[in-house]
Amino acid sequence: MKEFILTKQETERTVLVGIITQTQNETKANEYLDELAFLAETAGAEPVKKFLQRLEFPNPVTFVGAGKLQEIKTYVEENEIGLVIFDDDLSPKQLKNIEKELQVKILDRTSLILDIFAKRAQTANAKSQVELAQYQYLLPRLTRLWTHLERQRGGIGMRGPGETQIETDRRIILDKISRLKTELKQIDKQKEIQRKNRGKMVRVALVGYTNVGKSTLMNLLSKSEVFAENKLFATLDTTVRKVIIDNLPFLLTDTVGFIRKLPTHLVESFKSTLDEVRDADLLVHVVDISHPSFEEQIEIVNQTLHEVCNSADKPMIIVFNKIDAFSYVEKDPDDLSPKTKENISLEELKETWMARMNENCIFISAKERNNIEELKKLLYERVKEIHVTRFPYNDFLFQKYDEEEMI
Image 1 (cartoon, rainbow, N blue to C red):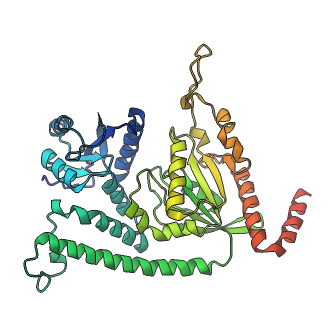
Image 2 (cartoon, helix red, strand yellow):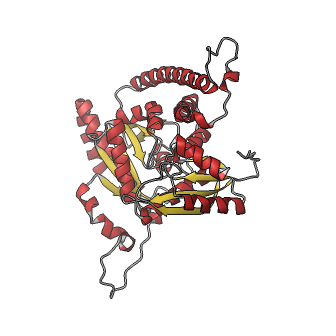
Image 3 (cartoon, helix red, strand yellow):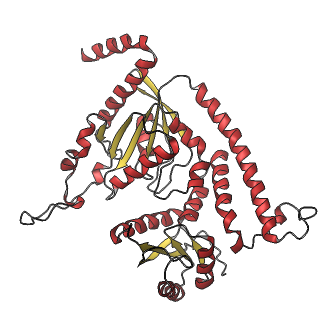
């Protein structure tokens, strides 16, 4: 294996590899590689080329075919590439064989996301969550590593009779996983106490795919300075702010964004973040309507909420953000072929299935502050409905306030 030492001025040049299958056509595979490129850029790499191969299923030995792997190797050697990233998770066997053939650093989708999470983690809670996920990812892949982890623990008395290096490393990692789980349980208890101390205020959670503008919207509604950036997973630590719209206070939570193929053990590590979603009274699902696959992103978020957060029955508002970036190509009048997503205007989209959501759907631009007042009114109404059921005696006060506003 070659050694790659980065300085602050250097950026790793990388190539991306994906496959086209019966369940993932060429258009979809290219979209996924575009997302992988965005992930790589977020991690600090520079994608220079994409490789795609049509296969019925991934090669169990090298993920792609032998010919395609040789093509990648030739390109890597001729262009001094130091990193190859695969769009799907690689088995330990695939990882070992690909590294042996290409002789460069190999990452799969999960390890890339873990690297970004490690870079983004700021609090002790987030760092512990990421470290736990990293060790859980590392454990089945020890056969390809020269870790010598026993040096971190001391050697005398730590190695049993006939114990191999990999058995020692595995035991050390299992101990670290156990310790981190204990730490996170304690953190979860502290978070639970914090949530209880917030009283019975209505809780609203911002959820959605990564990089759809949740943090920007959070800043607008709460008048705070939550970190927001045009990169994936800009927000990793859960942020809670008190928001007051007219006379009505509630708690607004900004959560980590979801993504396609989000590793299960990573999701499980971020239990405290998901607990904020589970405990929310109202979900605000933020969607980037300018993204060509926004409908698939909606499905991924809904599926994750259902499977992991058990939040399928919670009331929800869908906020279609980035209407300022929405674009379409108007069809020629003589073109009689059916319209595609690229030919549908924003006004036509509003008349599709979104129209059936009645008043639980709104179109905004957080960046340009378009329709923000309308969003505040919608939030006010939905939060008030929950608040009044919790505190029935406040209904009279709200009615009086609304009458004064009309005057």
